[in-house]
Image (cartoon, rainbow over all chains, first blue to last red; front, side):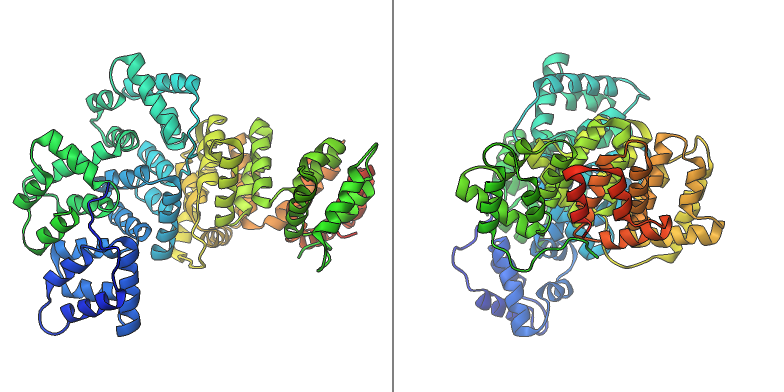
Length: 312
Length: 312
């Protein structure tokens, strides 16, 4: 479930007008920006942007970019983008981040549905005049490239059919693949980048049944290099993306200095989807409410905005 | 230009009725089947199939399958399918063909536009409950797998921008890659599976300018194994698909016994697109009209149908 609280009825024209007032003249009325945009769903936000453009012949997004700053600006900017376009921006930033960004690329394409990945790839074309796989491939090499390019290029079958025999065979292949230190990873890459998510879940379950340990735990023991870390992230995102996001939030908030980019990414991309479930997982795991942890670690308008998206 | 001759006005209901008459009772009136279906465009054929189903509660395609036989049946069946669905069928047959089918898979996805490849991948899901890349990957290995999976998964950027510096660098990479006998093909695969077609054409041109030989000719010298043959096919399809199809037709007709599958594939997939240009290329290259070559090599209803699609 979502955490976003949005009114059923709203007037895009009135919202655009109020936002125009908020950004006009000296200083910005950040409170109004948060109150309005922090309570509008994706469709409403696009309506507001359109209405703002029609009335003031100016892109609201560009205006907000120049009026706001720091983590607050980045969060509002990402929040205002249409989801596929936002994913394209996040993926592009992650590609430029090099090794540090791989888990973000993997997270985005492994959590999205197959059709959403296609929408992201189209948005990436429009924005960067390149294909996503082209930019990922140009910045990586070896097995890591094969895995990342495979994940971003894949259009997985979305049906519910399971082949139990295949699950058994491929659980064994994954087991052999992970066990070997300098092993042949081609088959593990093939399985993870081409099979349907339903089939992969069956394979992961079979892995645990046959080998007495979950594949993610097993991988954690071996996740010393970038390739194994990438495998680990992909499997976690496919296996249980809410649990994965809980851990990203935990890591982001526990770090000295807080990882604002990670925090913003999870809140902004999940607020309209399943952030409520992720919040519950967070509380179960940490015995602290996510809102309280967030309130302690960040401050100012950024804090107010993130708490608003969290449904506070 | 197309070779198909289709009337501007036609009545799907009348066509369905005539076809029903043609397939009813003992024996089939193949001439009517050819006269009607051989003169209807893709939209009209779908309308006829729909109208036939509404009137007779039967799938025209299934009926034709059971009434006709041999190469004629296969040609009519492929002709009647919606293009993305037809490509899915052709790709699936090619996957099952093993080594012999690789060039067909490469041809299909390298000639189609990026959006058409996505449509094919969707049609493949619907028909086979698997992803195309999943089935391709399961039937191949090594560099050949990387190349084939990369080609079928790619969603190339479709814009016209060219980066001349990149064309120079990557022409050199391709040259090095092809020169080495047991070389590092990773980079050649990356370039051919991710760059836009416009960029690749610039790279191939640059290759010829800098190395005094076209990349296809150079590859031909080295095309001894399956991987090099696959590279060669991909580059030819991207570089000039009409020239490529002319050669497929030439090969199909010159073979002892004729390659009917190849012949049918090219005629059926290009009749509504650019078969007229391919015909002209054929005449220039062979000093024989394609229709005459076809008439000499095949016979019966299959011959009549193929010649009809050729605009005879």
